[in-house]
Image 1: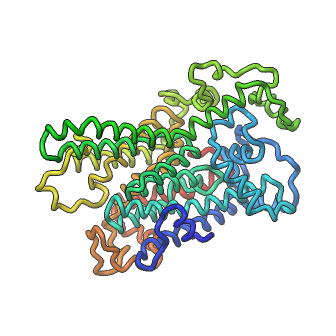
Image 2: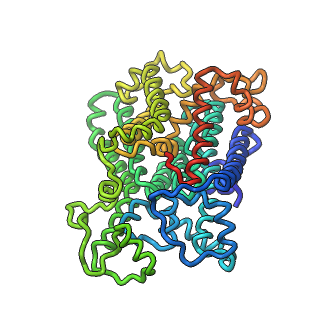
Image 3: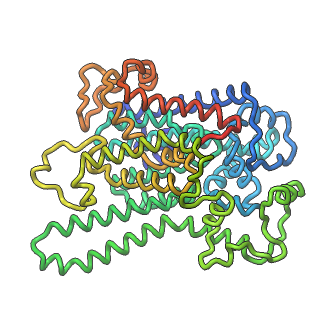
Length: 512
């Protein structure tokens, strides 16, 4: 399946000759994926792997010559959390702490390994095919995510050039290595950005489906229920401000309120359903009657050595099973990873706070910039109808009112990640969940006019002009010295984290 066909399947418009920016985005994203795969292999070969105290199950069965070759080329993409995803795809949810990783991504890996890569089973063992599946899927997902971000930006910002620049920056995202390694970030990003775009187009039920699938990939997909809550609330509030008088409004209020409430409940329930189903699955598996599972001896020994909890064969239930609301996800985050409010605020974590400092500053700056540009809109939560004197004013770019709900979403994720999570994950947490990081960065670079052809209207809200000159991302990098200091800092952050992530993560060194 081509990228164009896959984009069409996700509800995106296929790449056409009428939109040269979208074509450039797809080409750039594909080139960046290829370059990333090449660089990670080079760095992994040149730099010895660090011995980290991380989840590292034994390789069963023993690898063959082709397996060793694949590991030699792509092994840098199978470290840290990638080990969990590959293990789950191969063995299922064998250990309790595996339940922190949601099932849709491992299921996708297994489907591709047993389906499209089935002819390779004589050459590659299952784990090798799973790793190859992860590389292929994530490469496709990241290209589709760049296209989805561009189309979302066009719909929200109403400025093709800013949307285009944001999509280019996504191609060199600071979270780049996690979009390529066997992590669920790429899958979550394409589903989330596509769902946001479909919601902007008015395709509510398709948006619900995509958001629901995103929740089956990562738990923070639950936060996306806020988009529907806000959309329905805004529509209801604006309807109350028009009409032929309060008597008529009051007579229709009850029916309208009931319709809005039922719609919100249905959509939010649909988005939350995968989370609830997975918690129920974990409860049945670990809290139900003991099941006789055929666990290889080496994996049993690993559980004994590391203290991992297997499905209890003797009926002894884990502590979380007796809770009023037995949610294994919150229990694992609390017990295994010490995730909680202000728990990470320790002197020894200062290096991790420094790693997260750029994305924290960028996210906070984006919120401040939007708030200062739209104080009344923020105070009224965007629920007030625009005044007549404002109707004729152009409303496009990062500071347009339509960005409000995305800024609120990004700010909520930023606050949650900074105070309640391992702060260094903020880079990939925001980079894979919110378009604001890329929109605001593009906003800061918007005056770099050499990106466009001579005579193109920089302030146009709808026209694409004649398209970018040459390879746009390459032009962006080659003109680094002629950029403003702010633009240099933004671009330097993206490129440095793009490269550092490959060097450190692919050699099992601590990263974001």
